[in-house]
Image 1: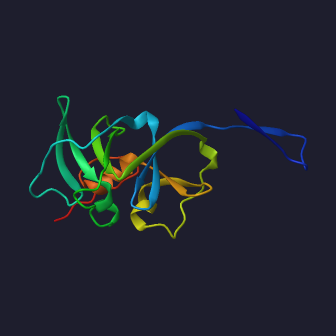
Image 2: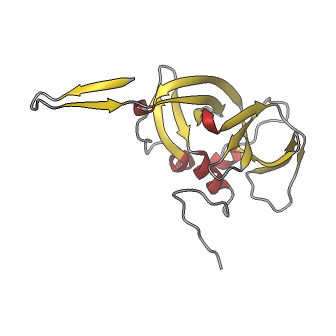
Image 3: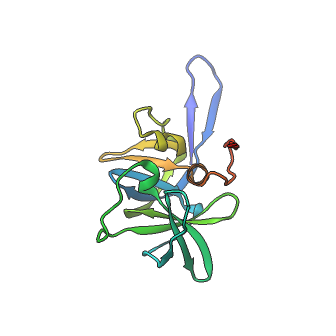
Length: 174
């Protein structure tokens, strides 16, 4: 799909290729977020987890999903929301980072897969939660919600300090 832009002061016509992207929508607390579908392996129900002593607060534990052991991260804890009650349902989105490592991201609800033009996303507003601003690749204002496009690699790097991700700086603490 292409958009043609005509500039009145010039006879040059610029063609701008739009980039449709598929996004899995999820909800965490009151915020709707989206993950690029090419990074989503699957969405699963809660798995039996092994708690890791001395792990960062956002690490819920380790899960074994069909022989693959991966770290499960509680998205609510990362953004500073209170933990959900034990009886509240949740889902786990299995996400692959650019380095090929899989993580389970615990979300409150899963919406749908939507196809959008990447150019529709706007810059992340400064009024958004600080953590969301750090991991956002942009926001899309929809009729009834604001959808935040999450950069999974920055999210994981923010959560687990020693992981490497593009556009992050390593900090050595002495």
